[in-house]
Image (cartoon, rainbow, N blue to C red):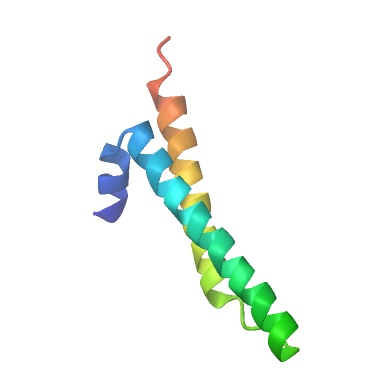
Length: 72
């Protein structure tokens, strides 16, 4: 069901989601860097990994939509 909803989104919607995720990913990485320098140890990168997985899924969906929309 969720995949069907992503399939129905247009490229600009997917691009917006990708932008939001990339900003959140950058913020999460910055917090991880600050935590490492301040505390001397790295936080688990679990949230950053999940954000990266979501970004990759959105990118893949955008590429799939482009491939499907090509008119012969």
